[in-house]
Structure formats: C-alpha cells, structure tokens
Length: 125
Image (cartoon, rainbow, N blue to C red):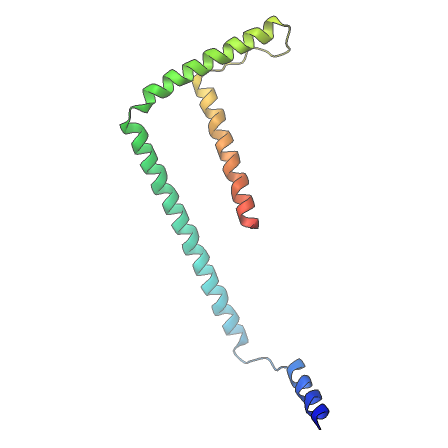
C-alpha cells in the first residue's frame, strides 16, 4: 500500500498542472526584477555623477589647473628628452607631438579603458 501511495504521489508531482495565473505571475516577477535593476543602475549613475561633480569642484577650488599645466609641461619635456635620445641612437620613432593635452588625453583614454574592463568583470561576478 505504501508503494502504491508513493507511486501515485510521485506521478502527481511529476505531472503538476500549470496554474491559471502562471503567465501573470511570471510577468509580475520580471517587472519587479526589471524595476529593481533600473533603480540600481539609476542610483549608481547618480552617485557617480555626484562624485564626479564633487571631484571637479575640489579640483577647481584648489587652482589645480595651474599645477596641471606645470606637470604637463614637465612630462612633455621629459618625453621630448627621451625621444631625443631615441632619435640620436637611430630609433625608428618619428617626432611625436607630446604636448600636455596629448598626455592627459592618453591618460583619460587609459582610465576609460580600465573602467570598461572593470565593468565587464563586475558583470560576470
């Protein structure tokens, strides 16, 4: 008798009928998850924008633009000296325009690339 009951019970669970509101339930769960993801992405974007704005205000209030110009000029001079050494030794490099703007643009692009890689790894975790 126990075997018959177990077989019947097993058959009932294996052939579970679909609930009439299953599609509605799935749509509600999807909407709720989508809303949470949207809120999370919006909050992260707003927090990033606020942080960037605060950092920009701090940089501007500290007169860092003058210091950045000096640093850019120093980097440019160092790079030009390094290229001069390479050219004297017969290197194949041509004269590159390494002004301060080019150096900072390269640094910004590197930062963007690292951010892109970090977000790709964060999505996989």
